[in-house]
Length: 93
Image 1 (cartoon, rainbow, N blue to C red):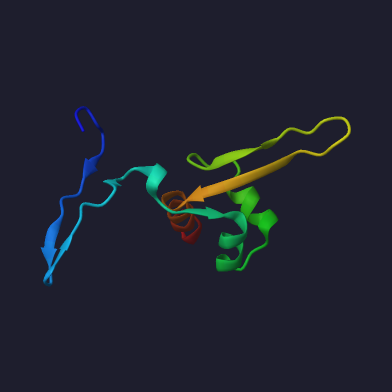
Image 2: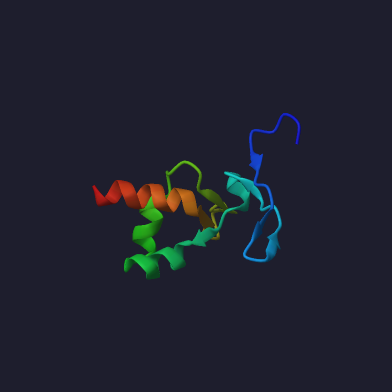
């Protein structure tokens, strides 16, 4: 990948088996993304608390509908694993 900011890991021989090259290292689009409920269950907090923690966090994916006069807005958050780990480290201090 010419001009790419990401590096591709090379395949190698591992215990009698060839492992194929993995996805680009450090590509946030390919890392695991968690739902609010998954993190809430894991951390033992409510979904609303997790939404408040992550709603302004850089790197969180948010989409949904806007509120209108007759219907409420809905939004969905997907939190990349790297963002979840960063916030967890910050909250531990």
